[in-house]
Image 1 (cartoon, rainbow, N blue to C red):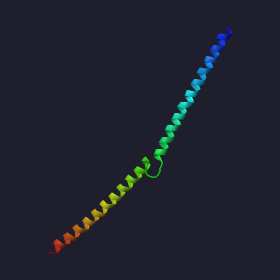
Image 2 (image 1 turned 60 degrees about the vertical axis):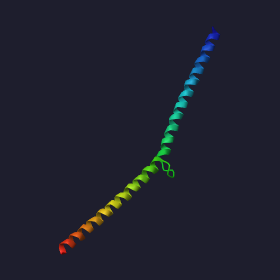
Image 3 (image 1 turned 180 degrees about the horizontal axis):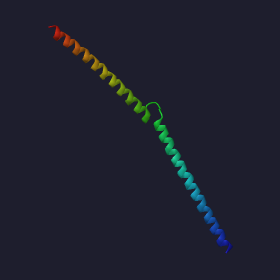
Image 4 (image 1 turned 30 degrees about the vertical axis):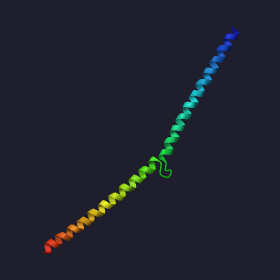
Length: 88
């Protein structure tokens, strides 16, 4: 009977160690996933999502500035054209 209790205790210990190892492994996988996400969202010289968003935002701002400049120039041309027609 003592042998049966000893084998049962050993099996229980192995199960507990296995469960603990699996829990530690799952925690490690979550940490790795979080680290990967943080690395993707931090600037790293052009390859991250943050760098891509920053470049896109800069291009949008440049384009908006060019549109504003063009609209201003068109207004000036319209005023000159109206003056020209009014003076004739």
